[in-house]
Image (cartoon, rainbow, N blue to C red; front, side, top):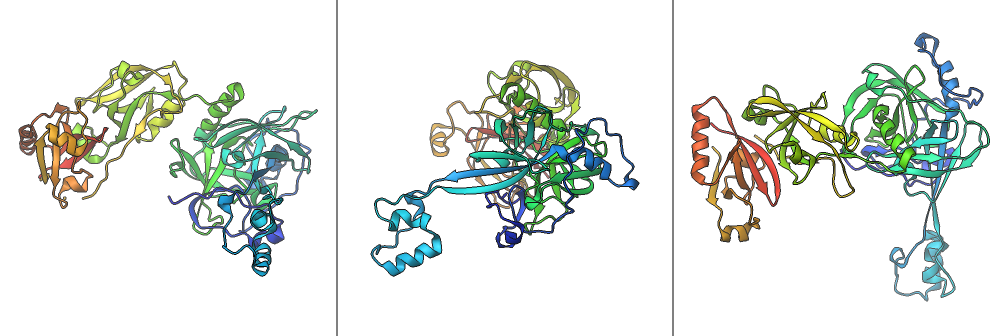
Length: 513
């Protein structure tokens, strides 16, 4: 994915929206105001008090009854961010005594920007305000509002705007940047309409979904589509598991709810894929199954606590699976076990493949960080692992992570396509110094490599230290030669190398012919 564009677009009336320039991006955050095709705007209606009890609707009758029930709980979020210009922001043009140039620059850039440069000692740069719009929804009658973190993260003022035009100031109860979720609170004298979370895991590809939000400042906009895909990773964070939808969403939809046909919130609309800046029918929502855990923690404590296992992992490729005797490429390969971690205490070893976590299959490497993060600290979990070409199980007591560490660390080896082509040498003091190899690192170091070899194509580099072949510790060059001969005599087509690269440990599978 290419870069995401955070929203710092100024608030504009619809007839001024065409002046706002939106830069192309493959995944862009939706907050703010821009230019695009406007979805169906539904007239505000605040009479229904809540969405609880909505039965599954007949789509042949349309979605009007559902919209009337849930729309009062969907709100617009208006934010103001203030920043004060400094001398670093102000260009210097040399001759400050040229009145014609001064007047021209003032007109072009504005008085507040050049006040310090041209206005004399008594002139001070003015504070600059940026206004942005987003969406949100109420989940309790006492005014708890859910939205995206990126909608409010830089805001100095937050205002909640209801469908009937009423406005209330809001405070931030808590935010979580990694999951892009924020919880706000407003105070009112009367109960507020609210909606409830549904089961996002039950949503299947092809199911109807309804998005309501505030695109381009047009509050109460309703769009309808289907679930296009599940489990999308758009590289926006360590726990990506988005629901992909084709219901049109645009800038300003961020933080708005995604409903199923029961009127339950099954996602938070958060990002779009867009080469042009507008909706092209590919949007992404954070599943409610993930959101609820984060929201509950923020409401209870104001912070988010994540589980920690203490392993470094990488993807199980087809070559690695073959080298480990796995019939299919799945799970998370443990390339390093952190000292004094739950993983070490549980007996996990380098080379283990975690294939199930607490009875949940780990289809891909990226599944494991999310599963661990959602586990409460001091919980005991069962890990099914593949070790020595057979399956076994261990129990781990998950700890609490901190801001300095993730639940797991991930590492990938570069891959390409085509003998090993390696020049190898046992480690000595001179080579340790030349390649910055730590004193306690053992193995055989690569001092040269054929750039056309399979090893180079798979990401192996000069300076890498081969520590193991499969589960066998390597201490001499002869051991590697012997391993190649055994592989050629047997039915294996690749060697699995455990490599230390400047303190980072990873597995690389290299074909042998």
